[in-house]
Image (tube, rainbow, N blue to C red):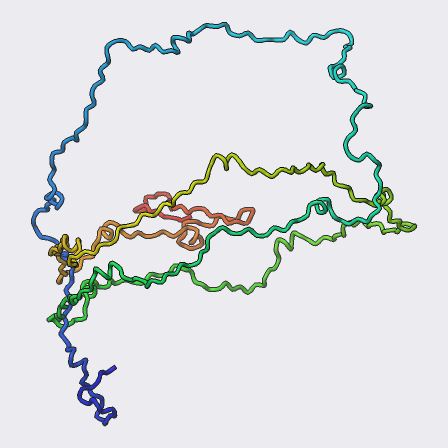
Length: 456
């Protein structure tokens, strides 16, 4: 996006000479030469000559100091009091130990059987005798025979007939009226803050000057420390150990014989025996529909049972005396209600408000110096050959990995040979041993003895 052109501020249509290349950005921001950034890495070149010093910052700055044992309070030694200890107590004086004979076990001599038949009368028969019930008092209530009622059953209970419901009005509340209390005086909105604290002018905010940008004096190279120092190591890509993913192909027809089809044959099956239920036969005659309950218990007409009320007591004609001991002994006294404590009225201070707080008057700011960093100065390594020899490459030598014998069992490099098949059809192999045998017996015609090696 271009800025507004200062040469043609009012020309909105082009005249064919092309866009103006003079912009506000090119006039204000000038290009500056940039140089490569210096690296902070220290110089990694080995030191030549000199003795290795084992003096560290810990050993130089911190010196051993003599240590003293902390003060320990020595307890006073125990001094045994003179005289003998009086261990006589009331228990030892009054209760004297006595030696008693151990109690003997009480053993029965066994059950004594008395010969003859036992003839006796129990206490229940002799003390509790049957009395004559002729003079027994008859129970209270109706002794007449039951007579069936003649009126129709109404369905009401004794409680509903004798106890009538009385209408009770709602109780009058003793709570006072919660209505708002209105005042005719105007609302006084003067506060202590409005009366004492006055608004003062705020000084302008301190603005720190920004440092101007200082461009480097070297032209920008475009190279980094990583590109200059670290070169790629030559190597070959790792080969894959996966086998070839080709599908297995065969021209022979598919054999669909399985163990299930060869061993398990289809056998004829018979249906299980099912017991046949007997058919329902309707009994002869007609259904009566009568039960023992309907035949024995006949519904009888009922009458209302009169209520057994107690005899009503006669009401006294004298007036009711409602005086109690509480009303007589405890008389009601008129007391005054405790008044709340009132705070004293506020007295305005006549002195002028300074506007300074305790923190601002006591605590003053002090100049702070920046802490010096203890980090070493980083300097990039300039030139030199990069030595990539490590202890791992010097100590660990690559060794050849021997393949598994089962993977190359049928190849010429295998150390096993085929021996035969067992009774189950499994292949067996045996190790191959190298032996040295003589070809012929020694003779004087031969200049030297020849030896042959045969591999079995």
